[in-house]
Length: 118
Length: 112
Image 1 (cartoon, each protein chain N blue to C red):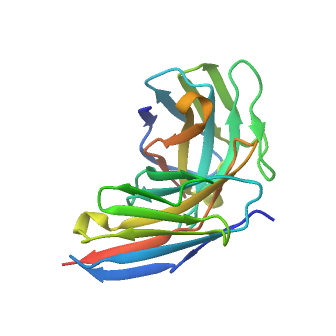
Image 2 (spheres, chains in turn orange, blue; image 1 turned 90 degrees about the vertical axis):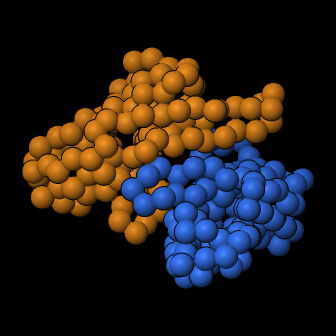
Image 3 (tube, each protein chain N blue to C red; image 1 turned 135 degrees about the horizontal axis):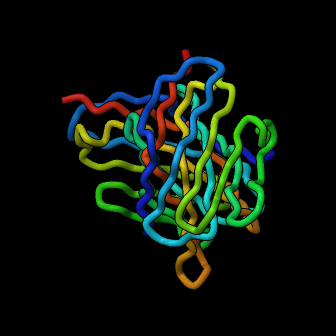
């Protein structure tokens, strides 16, 4: 299993500012992801955080808006840049852990960062 | 297009009663299906994961079923408790990909 912590747990920000969210995992993991969950919606994958290289972004998400760092196998940050009220959401860090000799993969989620942009 | 649909969208039951949540998917080629529980303001927590060859899996009072032929899954909750109030999300992954396809969830409320 994997235990994931995120900081901050919640924040209220002014439009035009930026917020960096930290994700810490209690063990080394290869695959780490960032998701967004808008109010009343399910989770949407923002990007895969790659250790030692640039993150892989999903359609509709760009590096200038959501820069991601992954300096090692236990830590990553997601920055929400130049925020607008539409960025109000829960941002979740997630890791995938391979089990069963590679036969299955379990994905664990952090507690989330609840962001409100005024 | 790979999609996961859940029903009902929301459900209210009385404490102690049973309930069943449904999930239909069109993901292909299928790899596995997971059910997650998400408490309000928290991240999702895995309940069960099933591969193509598994048609039922239990985790305490939660029992998930999978029919890979009809591409349907259900999550049955027995003797519901107030702490079962949460969103339940069906998630399917396709073979040879790390990406998960999320359903929109069923919001369950258990009342005393």
